[in-house]
Image (tube, rainbow, N blue to C red; front, top):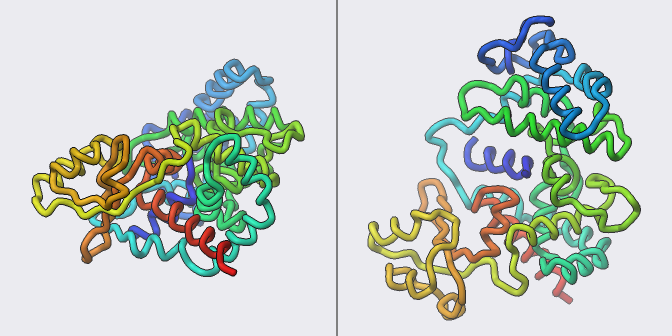
Length: 356
């Protein structure tokens, strides 16, 4: 759901479609074009886009003419098609480099200011959803630097590019982005805003929490009860929505996110524990039986754990034993690197708040 986390991940870990002029149908395959290429995509006249408009209008009970007019304003964005591509093969992951992008003095200071300004909403969200303030603050800090980096792409253009001209070279996710585009148009109509004016990330995520439109429809809440869900201008709505999202994905109040752990020395035993990836699958006793060494607190954990491995380039990898709450954070952005950065940024800000 989050795309700024993804963009940062791609950068830290190492780092569209040729279209004929209308009214021709969509090309069989698309390729990333130069930013200097002329804009010749006329989405409003393409047959596949018109079919999509009819489907979206029916599904979301929108005026078909309004949907067609909105899509006619969409433009192919070569930068979007390029940024959605995965990093080059063989790029070494580096947790230390990734962490350094987020757990650093300036972002911690910004997080302190955000927490102080919105403490009452953070406390209200924790009471209602059980998600600690430091986790919510950590997510908003990693996602958008507390609103400083919410994205400058027209969401209409980004989603149209990925819905109708998804680039070759990676698994085709155009169906996902078509669904998101439908939710986006429904959101714009519901909130009474022009879809052309909404800015966001290259993947179509919007606001301080970088929610995709589908996630806004399913998980965003009007936490300040003003009659609107404003993910860009209302810190209260963002805080409540982030907490509600995590609660919906299994956040357990009072449960730690992870414990320190020494992985098994035996390669085959380590491989067994790493097989489920970040999905908690082993009890503390089972991890110990496979050779993992947990802290006393970890040994007393009641519930499943996951051995999470984070690579550090040529250096030895880092490991943590992730709980259900660690897994819940990865549902926001499906990356253990992201989840641990969120957790450690939030903790660093909380520690600063406790200083005299």
